[in-house]
Image (cartoon, rainbow, N blue to C red; front, side, top):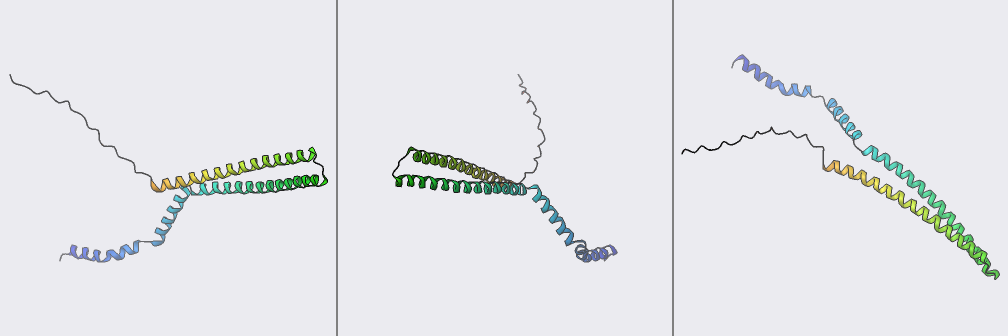
Length: 167
């Protein structure tokens, strides 16, 4: 064996130890963690979470307002019912009782319609935001970013020559 072959054999024997020494698992893990953190920040997940938090606060507020309005309506209805019952028991069927009951019923209907309408708008808006967020996430998941396409070289056309016919 020549000296070069012995050196080559010696290097091949030492190669696994040199590779193991050169690999730094902590540095690799830190690089992977940083890459994942950057991808998370670039995704739409944090923005979607913020939008959902805002929508949840709006829904909570609308629900509280709806509860207060419903309580107010129940109170008005009971008050109108007691007045009508008192008028019936006293034997007087005055137009005042009828008009106050009608007025309370109209107020009840208008308040309920407005609160119901805003609840429907809020829930519809929240469903739209959630749908858009989930759609964007799903689209990213299904269609990962594409690689740029390299253009093929242009092909030049050559005019065919007319055949020469001998007379």
